[in-house]
Amino acid sequence: MVAPGARRRRLAAALSLLLALLLGSLALLLSALAASSGPWTPLQPIPGLASEHAVVWQLVGNPANPQQLAAATSRGVWLSSDGGQTWAATTITEYAWAVDFTGSGSTLLAGTARSGLYRSTDGGQTWSQENTGLRSLDVRAITSGPTAIVLGTQKGVYVSGTGTAWAQAGLRDLSISSVAIIADTPLGVVAGSDQVAQADNLYRSLSVGANGGWQALPGGDPGGAPVSAVAVGPLAKGASTPPLLVGNLKGLYASSDGGDTWQAQSLAGGVLWAVNSIAFDPENPQVVYLGGDNGGSSGGGLQRSVDGGDSWAAFQQGLPASDVTSIDVLPTSPLTVLAAVWNATSRTPGTARALDTNAPPPVALHSSSGTPISVVVSPTPAATASPRQHRTTKAKANSVAAWVVGVAAVVIVVLAILATTLLRRRRRRLEAEAPP
Image 1 (cartoon, rainbow, N blue to C red):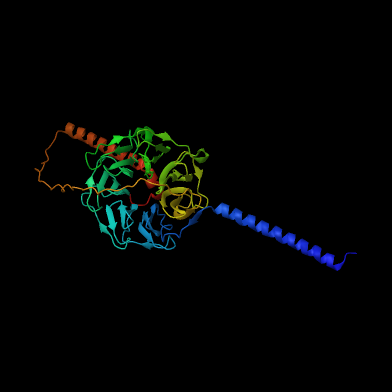
Image 2 (cartoon, one colour):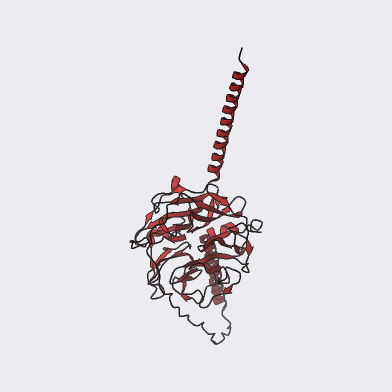
């Protein structure tokens, strides 16, 4: 017969064991849930974008105020002052490709598809159009440095020292989808085009604003692969050349000598997608993030490298969707990473934030400074009168010949339009009904 005290002790031991098992199971469950959610936290949806199947083309944060975010979308520019918990529309309601906080974050620029460049010095509350000297009003990419602001447009590259007056800087026959500054004085720029049927879509100039001097960099876009992203990392102290990465329809390419030579990079898992966005840690060139898609179908993702691009690992757990349209990195502790994505199934956009607690710390960097370049704006050509051409009666044979030539010209124009549409399919495929 078991004594009552012994029975109570056995019951207490059994209950203690059961409680320990329950707590252990709960801890494993919470750990699994945390692992499955990953580092990413979805931000609140931007109002109206999902119902209109709009795209977030670029999401950036203010380096001086990480809670201040700006989004360029196919339905205008949106702002958040609380890290993406709420969003407010701006007066820019048209199709916007790009946004950028310049310098210390005091100025915000926005590039649109039809109205050129907008500039704000009060955090996006008010805007002014700054198109002086700008001959192309389709502004597709913006980047800035200590001495210059550089635009990629439908008709080439433009530069400015202040963002209020622009000078054409070459490549005017190309639609420039991405630009990056590789040197401040003299101004060096790498520019990528996403046109097809081009022998070359990647170019470099080491004297922008002086004599132009653009040269093709075929190693970074083999076969003229359309370029979607160009990124330059910070220059480490003691280094002579910043790291350079290019994303195109064939994948990722890297250069350690300013673009003279290139190496194709192998992504984690052997995946191969169109690389759409690349972002370096602004305080450590060894830390870099990239995102891509698979042409609008299933695929794509986001990866991270902590060794300057020599190796890559998946960094997308918890991301709302796998097609990545934009990445930005803010110098916070821990490092803040922003991403914009597209769900190809539901045709809806998303945004998310990650705090990368495992990223390597900042390193000593080479100081970068200089005097903003001076831009001399060419006057707009004045209209000139020309003699009116009078119609004359032609023989029937000549009329038939002219008709044949006209039809051939129309066919050529139609084929050119179709080719251009296919060339820029990455930009257009996500929202076919939106204005280009």
